[in-house]
Image (cartoon, rainbow, N blue to C red; front, side):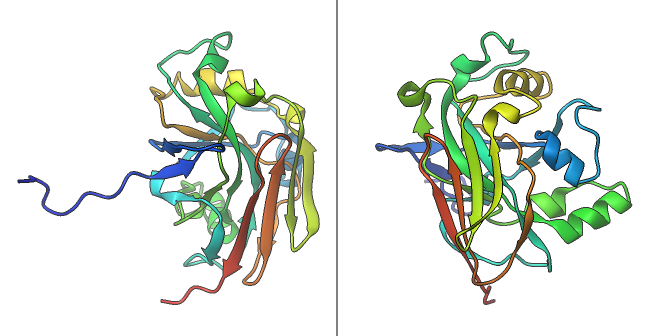
Length: 231
């Protein structure tokens, strides 16, 4: 007989391209990782160490129908590449960081921009802006064993067929080894962790009825449609 006082939640998973499921443990995100995006948000590129924040594991949404979030009138898209870890540790060196990568996926860090602006004004945390339900949209994970280290290649986001974000992974301020090394100095990274690596310029609003596509060169595209929430 189980000792749980109610049934525990199901394991959050992301499909793997070619078959299999990736079990999600934690979600880490990098803010301000493309110079052009830092500038459009009013910042100075690389004036501070990487900005990290988190989302709950159950914020994962694997595409398709997306219900417009609660408590916002200004939902923004942020197209990103996501790194999925197969192992981890603390104080990981940049030289060995790539050995911990299982694979990569196209992703979208959805943000309640109005709540983020209010938090910034009061110098408060971003939790309500970033940790929204279904706010970590992600496509199928392509194993690194199939494509090697993904440190360059086009990344783009379109809404209703119109390109809004277009850049290259090589333009990230902080490289994947730097991100993993620095994160592992703050948290013990483990298998199942996802890292959203930051977004280029061109972030903007999504409204009910929009169809969004994120493409990262070499990976499966991510598509989702914004529906009106009922209830």
